[in-house]
Amino acid sequence: MRTYLDWNATTPLRDEVKLAMHKAMEISGNPSSVHAEGRAAKMALERAREQVAAALGAEGADIIFTSGATEAAAMVLAGRDVRCAPVEHSAVKAWCDVSLPVDRNGIATVVDPVRSSLQLANNETGVMQDLPQGLGSSDLTQAFGKVPFAFNWLGITAGFVSAHKLGGPKGIGALIVRKGTDVPALIRGGGQEQGRRGGTENLIGILAFAAAAQAAQRDLEAGLWAEVEARRDALEARLCDVAPEAVVAGKGARRLPNTTCLLTSGWKGETQVMQMDLAGFAISAGSACSSGKVRASGTLQAMGFDDKQAQSAIRISISPALGDDQINRFADAWETAYSRWRDRALA
Image: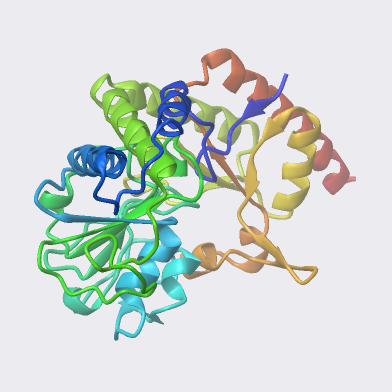
């Protein structure tokens, strides 16, 4: 039996999302058409927009549906003079002056909020930032559905999210901006999405996104993520007891309740991922492969870890669907693999 512990990469589709997608397939009209079928599609689209806004605490803001957070980030960052930190997702760093300093826990210092973009939570370490008032934009993708927040309370101008991080489908996301904010269209066409993104709306994806957002909000209100945090803390304690030299990146900061970034210097993260995969567990490494070369995580390097440490990183990101038995089985498998590696390292 496989056990999935890579929730920050993507999430399985929720049952209510699958149902919403099936229902959306029965809506035949184009939301831009004025006949009855078109009006029905438009009504469903706008209802979904309201539902996503409510889940984000963004009532009164503009919700612009996109293909995902990457496109939404480009819409608000392209062509602007914006600073960001090296711990940001590559979709943000692609458009910014990467110059904001971070400390050992990955907490960034922002001097000019209006001209800066700062994530609410990091995808690798789970470290959460305190967003300054007046911040130009924020990547809300990893935080949405895992921790309570309201866009209207954050004091930011723009934010972006993806549905597949909270049980929705891939290929749909949103840009959230305060009413009246100028966002030039990157994709021009028929004037859809308030003239900010041309092209017929992905109605199936949008209705599924709304279903996922509502379900995620219910999970938060039910306290499921507090239970996840307790399991995460117990897992970290066990792994660090087994491997005293292991380090949890960002341990001293406020983090997402489900995320562990573990560094065991000298034991490559890719090796651990493959070993755990063979044992039936899906996790991810803190470094990425590009053109056949293993590169240490820029996030971890910015936090002061050297290449050897950064290349040993693994990310374990769990979900409310996992119970103690599954997490303990993973810890057993990791402990066995660690013991073998340690024996070879000491030989």
